[in-house]
Image (cartoon, rainbow, N blue to C red; front, side, top):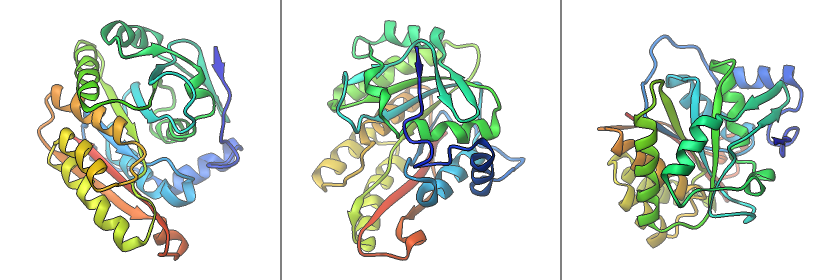
Length: 267
């Protein structure tokens, strides 16, 4: 079971050479890396969000194994959809799914189900893979697309993920793919995003979940971020760091309607 790229040539280049060049433009080599339990990274076209995503991936240790949670923008498939077999074709080749880890996650949480359809047209996880390859030439991952979950379900899923990951001999990085406010004036986007970022920095997943709803913050990956924050806490996270924040207006110069991008690490 192999998935073809959905947004190569659109969100990022479909040429391996050009993709490598662009990813290197948005990343840097540094000797000092953060050992993170979980991270939050944006997923727009690289021209807009690549600087934030690249800085996060440049700053943290990148292991061989990953669980990547993304929102389900298409609305296709189950609410917590996993692919546990095959691989994802990318411009440079195929990235293998970690079937062993996926099987343990499916067994640990009844919320998760096997469903490739939720991933077929979804862009928000795919765009993370070239950044991982920049720092780890070969790696394995479990893709998880999340739809509508309650906070209680997010917490239950996060704790189940933590139990599985905590039993692994090798480190596993948990990633939440999320953009922040969508199509708000720049000042308002920064104000609203700051409320959500403050809850993540406070390691308060329930507060994050609630403030996004009460303040109508159009953070598309709030469910993945809540799950990863719950899992990180269960794995022993004691602090969080805002690595970088920007809006699309920083690139385009148009401050009238922007999308916000935040990169965080849970330590």
